[in-house]
Length: 428
Image 1 (cartoon, rainbow, N blue to C red):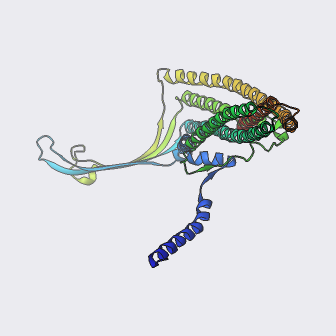
Image 2: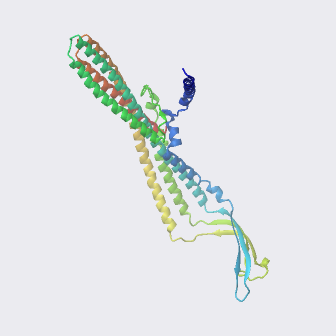
Image 3: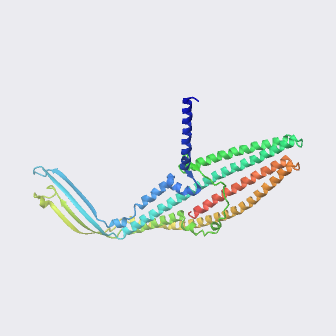
């Protein structure tokens, strides 16, 4: 080997070693998505969930007004003015003022305002929780759709292996003169049908992956891990028997309606106190120009004041009473709606829990049926090899097994989706 060729060869070898050294680290650093990470990923990456979080922060920032209402209010102004008054010569003089006031009493309206803002912040939290639960439920559903399509593709590939074995057996029998080559053609035809279904499952898998990544705002480089089996069937006995009280107590929809009713009720109470007096202490220092105070000496144009001020609204044309009544009626209407929503949520949770139990029973039944179908197909294939059975018996057994596998996977996927819905209703 020439010297240049040797250097090139050595260079490629070094480059290969570098790739081998880098590859494990790169693989370890590759971001991955797993089922238990979905809630945190939604909170971090979903624009709609983040928008709800910001709305909560915005509403919470308005609380604390009661404490701040007792802080002094200070205002100041200063300037210089050129003027001419009557027959006097033109003057240019400074002016300014500073005033401070301190709230002592406002008829309880400050306290009601703070309670109303706290209720509005709670309402915003309930709306954000509702949005998050809806997004999480949809995301979990997409995850299980993806897992279903992947497992269906694996099941179809296994079925293709069975068809290939059946075709090989048919060809052996035809070679021995025990049957015609038509038997092999039947297996070829069914194999093509299965391949079309496999391609469809792969397309649906790709679409489910795109939808899931889009909902989580992830790029194509992020791997999504689904369980090796759609469900290592767990007995969720605790979930089957769990009290559904939390589905009503913690449900953000009912909680939000209750907080909205409280907000209206507090606003009505606040307006109904339009007539209560306000009391404050104040102090002021003012410097006027000669145009406003006819004293040529500057010190004579300085005012200093301090005192106790009482404000009392005597009549507002019944406007506040009218608005207060409207808000109180809206609060009563929402309280009635809260009760109706709680009943609807409780009924939905009970129905979902019952549906989960039923699917659990159906899964056990389909697992037993699937095991029986596999045993029957195995026996049929053995009998076909001995010449007792025909090719149609084998194909019928494979078709039956494909249907049983798909039915079992469908029930497992539906179980996971219903379980996700129940967990959503329970706030988990």
